[in-house]
Image (cartoon, rainbow, N blue to C red):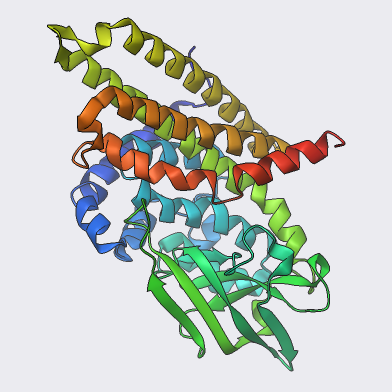
Length: 383
């Protein structure tokens, strides 16, 4: 079924971004995978090329266009070229962190931060998860205690995407440790603040080119002017409001990864022969790929409707949760079945399907596990 999500301007943007990937990403991606991090210059180059901060007003150096279809194109093209890990940092910057700066910054904060976010000179991250608490954010122990014109921050975060590269870290803290959800606030902690330390770049199963770090805060003095929002205690509401877009971002990348795995496998089974014929001609191969093609098409159309709803300001947390769990589970299922059709070669890391298999496993965990997504949906049913 033909997709109707994109218009000519999005396809022109896609062609431009493909050229960017061919020149700036693909020749270096294996090196970045070995290094466990992309260079900071990638963000600056992306910003100069117009691929960061598309919705930031032109007065702050952005594109001035609020249209999540451009973000979707970037996700699809990163998956298509096999550079999922390199794309994760840019998607986090554009899709997940930027909405907090756009929605909750006052004019002074916007003047300070938005130009650098648009240019890629200021790389962003968001720090919610702490060691030992998993999805139970209200149990966090990182505190920010008011001391005059500053907060004094103590605590630790883990599994932080862009954790090594980030200059601005949106950090979930307890400004009132006696409260659970109502005691949470969001503070922007900046590179170079004394007491803000980064731990090791974590060694992961997949997504190797993406820096993922532990962060620690020891008596970090953060200006009150770095609080997001007009008052303390609104952090949980801010997180819940923005999680729908975050989960859609992960879901659309999952579908794009499944689509890429399908296309790679179709090419492989047409060329690889066994018993004197292409393995794609066997009934089992046809049935497996028919099932995958059907599921990917259906999921893609649901995602397209979610993107339309987000653009219209109508995407609900429940619908985003449905997209997130279904599409990431689909990604894992599709990549696994496609690897099986590659046989022994699928287990070799020189084949893209092997890396796709390792990269896919985390998507069912970050941004809210499948189990948490089902809990959100189940509660909406009155259960």
